Length: 290
Image (cartoon, rainbow, N blue to C red; front, side):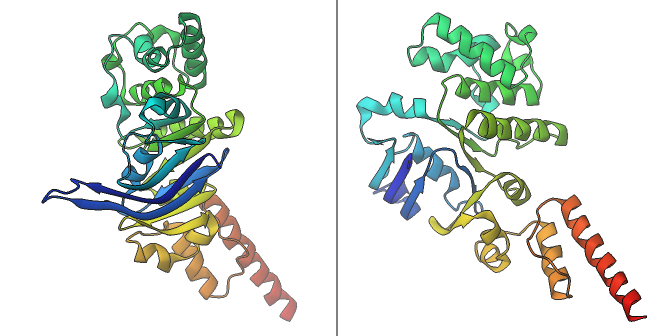
């Protein structure tokens, strides 16, 4: 395992009149190479959970262990941040340097990389994220929303983390921008072997991308397992304040009407294939009867 949480509890405003328990009794292990989706209604503890994973927040109770390092070990916090990169929702709000190049280079420079290493890293992540060389000397604030998002992600990737956490990475982007970001994330997982942890309110995106799904409800894990187990359990999702993707509701209804569905699909075109095959099978049976 690469990340382990042992009986973790986190309280905002601890020991004040405004204290609020965000997480309680969380036990969790994450291995290298996984692609995990974290879902839950607003206020369920998703963002708190991932901020604990790279030491941005520290638990009041329990322990978070990253590659053998306890996040409470302040002397090794840089090592943890190098291993676990966190991209916040609307990460472009984190851009602050004068040029795109300097913004991407900030993280590795802060970690003590040499100028030559920084130059190599910036070039590598720009190629991966399709950031043209022509904008590197521009101000990041001159860029489009999609470009800003990719530059912010590039700044995290330039530190070469083994785990990449993305909190609503496509929020506010149009369909083209969303598709581009998700294609990049898939490549990072498939070609670079990155462990990816994705928070998204869009359950369809999680269903299409992730292999394992963690459901949070009122600061506790209500489910953790393969995606097909959670997405085929609509009642579990609804109990957690979530609405399943329409394609799953459709398949449940079709199954109740006698359609043969061996495995639930998450892409509309694949569900269309299931419907066509079932209808074709019914027509054939009717023909045989005649």
